[in-house]
Every structure is written in C-alpha cells, then in structure tokens.
Image: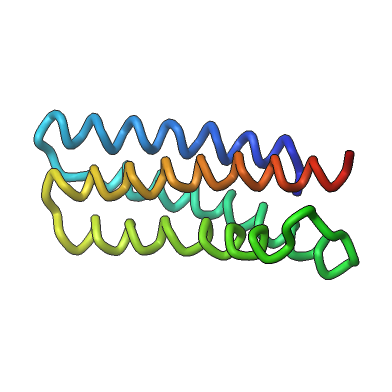
Length: 121
C-alpha cells in the first residue's frame, strides 16, 4: 500500500460519508454530483487495492495476509454496490447507504494501514 494514497482514500471516504448523511438529513436523494464523487472514491480505492495486490504478488506478507486480502476485496466491492443501490432507489435512504459504504471503506482502509505498517516495522 502507498500510505499517502491510503490517507487520500480515508479523506475522500470521510467526505463521502458526511455528504451521504447530509443528503439524508435534508431529506433529499443523492444527486448526480454525489454519485460521480462516489465513483471517484471507488477509482482511488481500486488503484490502492491494485497496488497492494501487486506488492502481495511480489512477495510482501502483511501480519494477517488473509484478513488483508479480505479487506482489499471488500473495499473495492462496497462502493459499487452502494452506488448501484443509490442510483436505482432514489430516496433519502440512498444517501445513508452511500454514507455507510463510504465510512466502511474508511474504517477498512485504516485497518489495512495498520496491518501493512505492522508488517513493515
């Protein structure tokens, strides 16, 4: 993993989470800009996961390899599922779904950073 990119994922996911909660509180469905932003979060997350998988394929072994792989797959799957839901069901609850996915990506990325840096130390 690239720590700077991981922190970018964390920041982008935090903003997406706040935005999702805000749309729900305002009783609005996510708009096009919010869905595009979720796509940007997914793109950065995908790049980070591909870099991490590349390092794993190159022989790097984090402390908990299976957990790391599970998180790397999970963070790539969450946002597209939430995006599909939010795009299909245009209600205030779609913002909550996007927020939960984004905040889950945030938490999982922080855990990945922890696993990755324990292996390096």
